[in-house]
Length: 265
Image 1: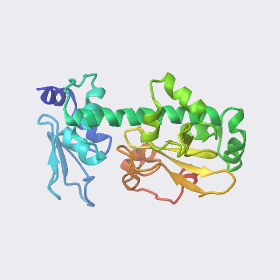
Image 2: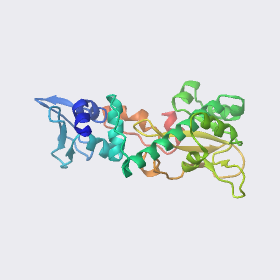
Image 3: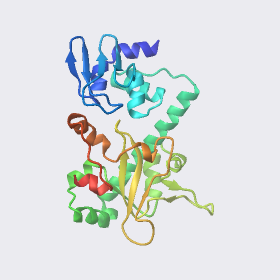
Image 4: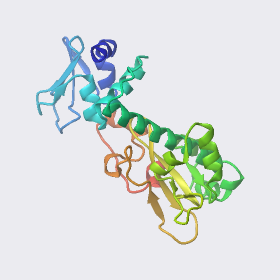
């Protein structure tokens, strides 16, 4: 029942139009299929029927299925995203799917809290060296803010306290790989200590992980968040949340190697 109510409230044209440039043809809308390469549009969307279909590759379904296919979300994640768009609250049912969704929401919230703390640290006294590095690379304060860049100090206590005020515990920060438990039973330590942080944000604008560059000392120059329930390195491109509209309009994407390369474009 809720699924049908959601589909009745959602305009499938608005949703798919964020990923595909659609043009009206009669009662339908058409565009280039996002699921296979083509030069002539064979992808059709029907507003009244609330479904889409590609005559080229056979892909089709409703708005929920589209969100799942285009973003890699689970069913409950797609329902949650769409419900939020129209101000509906997803019924609270204790199922395996809902428990997984709640876990993922917690991890995303933990990443977001960490991103806020790292940005705050970067713009404070503790982040002076990191800020000098970034501005020395030609980044402006506006660019630094737009990409939510940050700095992770050695002492994790500030992050732990900051996250605690937002209802995020140490276990959630450990689950996303930001904190690592001590081998000797002491307090956890920061995986990214002494590094500039590049939040990895998916196309639905969720902070799902981090890339981190070492400023000085020994260690790998770059490291990433470990794989988690929300972060899969091979499934996301850094900067995609900012580039997706341009990619949709131009039907072209420029792929570069590093975080700074993306920011410098």
